[in-house]
Each structure stands twice: as C-alpha cells, then as structure tokens.
Image 1 (tube, rainbow, N blue to C red):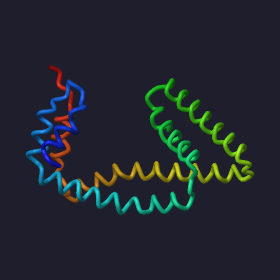
Image 2: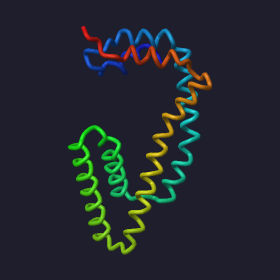
Image 3: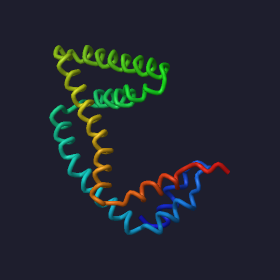
Length: 163
C-alpha cells in the first residue's frame, strides 16, 4: 500500500483519531506491512476454499442468502451487551425466520424444514470460520509473522486522543 493509499484509507476516520500518527506509522513500517498482508491473504485464501465448497454444496437462493446475512448480523454474541439488545436480536431473528417460511410456502417447497436446517448449518459453519480468524492471528503472533509490539503500537495509534 502506498502512502497516498494510506491517506485515502484513513480519511473517513473520526476527527478525534490522530490520522497523521497512523499514516506515519504505516509509512515507517511498509515492508513489514506488506509481509503481514501477504501472509494473511495467503492464509485466508487457503481457509476460504473449504467455505466456498460448503456454500456450493448448499447453493442458497438470493432470498436465503439475504436471510443468512440477517441471521448472522443479529447473532446472539452481540446480545451480550444488554437485555434490550437481546430482545431486539431475538425478535429480528424470529421475523427473518417467518419471512423465510413464507418464502418457502410461496415457492411450494414441502421440504422447507430440511432446507432451514441446511441454512442454519451454513450459518454455524461461517460463524465458526469467523471465530477461527482471531485464533489464526494469535498463531501468526506465535510464529513471528509479525511482532507482538506491532499489535500494541497499532492499538495505541488507533486510540482516541483525549485532547
């Protein structure tokens, strides 16, 4: 990533974030960043092949795909914040499932229960893949793909200034 790309990427950051510091850090560590990006991209390409095969096996329709996105976004993990969010999440998930059931009824599908099971299997599979990404980054740390201080410094650079 070139310096001008860094500036364009960080333009949309909130005003309280010190964008100059972040851009300077990226420019100073360009070679390391390229190596990190290359390693992560190669790893994600390898791990996504299984995801694609599973997705091709189920072959969700556009409507089912939208339902998958909705169910993924209104997951139970975001509901740990408070009870109101949990209730909202449950209500929206139930509404998505009612819409999906109506869709199957309109299509005249008699095996809708099996299909809903397949959709939930896809959802669980992709959620576990997402959780694995964090584990993979921890493994990259252990393998020395990037140094631990990089993560700490990056966290400090992205912190909101109190000034």
